[in-house]
Amino acid sequence: MSAMHDGKSVKESILGPTLKFKGELSSQEDLVIHGQIEGTVGPAPKVTIGPEAVIKGGVTAEVIVVEGNVEGDMKAQASITVRAKANVRGNLEAPSINVAEGATLNGSIKMQPRRADGFSSASSADGLGGYARTGTGE
Image (tube, rainbow, N blue to C red; front, side, top):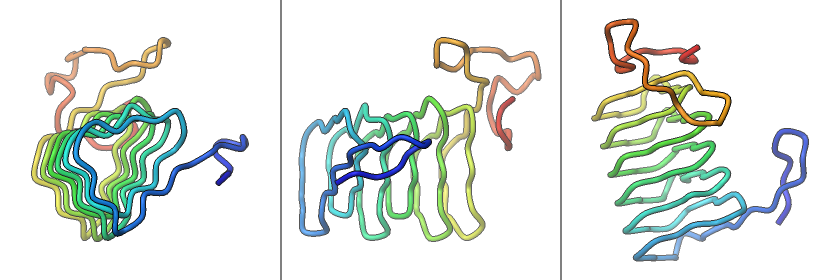
């Protein structure tokens, strides 16, 4: 299936609600998860965790959108969005993090500006060490 992502046509894999997967799942295309995964997800360009999805393990991607349940750390090179009914138990790390009102988040937030090579820098000039800030991290 193709979708538009930043003006480009990209492919995505949709993992349905009856899917139960255990292990490492990586992709060169966007992932939309509606089922249950025990293990690691990523790397992938974009990972969307649907409202009925349950992930027990880490998630790594360029962009992560959470609508369901995640028990594990998440790391994104661009952004993490936790939607209103999502339930997250784990640490988030990305240059931009958005947690909507109504979402449940139990973990730490680490935001650092994105370097030219696409990874977060390790700057603690603000005295927070990159933790517990909100906004774009810029």
